[in-house]
Amino acid sequence: LLCARDRSSPMVALPNAAGAAAAAAATALPRMGLGMAALGRPGYINLDRTSTFGSKDVRDVEAMQTRANAVMEAVMDAKGPVRPWFDCARSYGLSEKFVGEFLRGQGVAPDAVHVSSKWGYTYVADWRVELGEGDPHEVKDHSVENFLKQVEETAEHLGEYVDLYQVHSATFESGILTDSRVHEALAKCRRERGWSIGLSVSGPNQDQILREAMKITVRGGEGEEAVRLFDSVQCTYNVLEQRPGEALEEARAAGMDIIIKEGLANGRVLCNEKFLSISGAAGYKPDTLALGCILAQGFEPRVLSGGVTKEQLESNFRALEAAEQLRGKDASVLEEVMETCRIDSEEYWRDRSALKWN
Figure 1 (cartoon, rainbow, N blue to C red):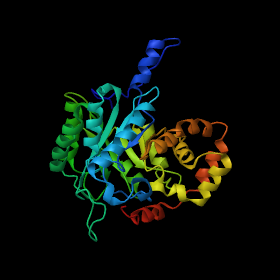
Figure 2: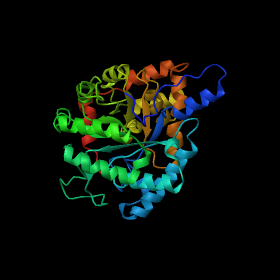
Figure 3: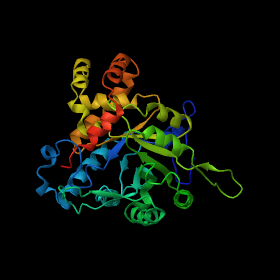
């Protein structure tokens, strides 16, 4: 489903039509972007943040914004033929504020960048890394009241730049899949603001949640048939966690935009001995190969980098070239990685839940 400000509609360039080709490149959805989860707040669950950020005592707002700006500048420099892409969330600390101030400060036109964000969690850590035992860093609320509150907050920080607004971590338990009031509010947001509407999923039953979400329809315009509510899904998928693959194939076939988060499994892929052995033998940097294996999948995903330095980002973005090789001369490497490194989904999410904020 395309909306007023959705610039994802396919454009076909005629042979030797340079103008049409340029227009297609300008409106194409970017294949890789920067996720702001690790840059918008001082703490996150990625492994060994201290080696990159220093101790928690030196991660004040100014320091984190300065680092975020440097990585965002690298995204702008690396954009290539398509628009740079930033993915935020209300619960990623000050990510929306950082991105909005950066883009406006750089004088970036809304049509020159792709921005996505999420609602549904509230950041409650008060810019601290370590909290009391059992205290959460973020609190989930998928009620219509919270949506109406958070959509206005997102509009304040990012308004003119937003292309895609996503439910953050939809689950069966949160009620988002059955709450028609929220569904209608999301549909109204799409009609009135021109934002595409998506959802993100997490946990060992991501595939089940996605399939249920694909069934949700809302009223179209006057006299129109009902239409699918969700235009996109943002899902955890990587060389370790491959369970959602079939559901993502189904979503792609249904016309949904597929976005992949946590492609390096919060750093765990880079500690996996089987994977490191394969990447070394094949001559790939581990992060480049891991993300390249995702980009090479048949459901044609767009992939978020979680890089927090220019060097990490550049290495992550080389996955675009790696994916081409993995679909061609290195197809055997792709097959070996996906067959050898996959682990049980329940084990994957159990290990993730044990990661500490640092």
